[in-house]
Image (cartoon, rainbow, N blue to C red):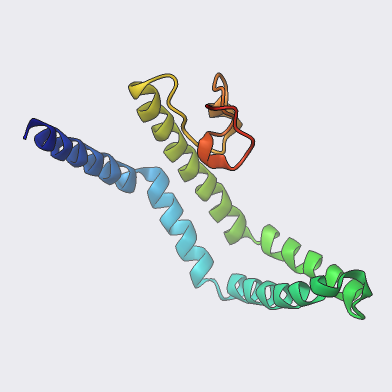
Length: 147
């Protein structure tokens, strides 16, 4: 019975933490940037053109450089990718996304280290992985030295 009450209290605290993240300036900025990306007709046109070319790219990749459209598609995919990446709304969104991911990584590390220094926390961020015997955590898909 005590373990059940303790578990419920932990879940309630976790929900409070989630709400704090959702209410943070970082999360609000992320939502605003996402809205700008989704509502900008210019940005969406660039994304759609890139997605369409990506489908052609995947088709061409099956045959590699022997495909008759290989050079053309390879050049166009790079140009369209660059246009998407240089779009102001996309660039702002990527920065906001990285900021939010950084916050979540910090929280993961704090929670994990509170339990034990040996708890593996997959952050995908080398800044947080220092001192860990398992670079990136066990869930990172890399070669893990954990036993």
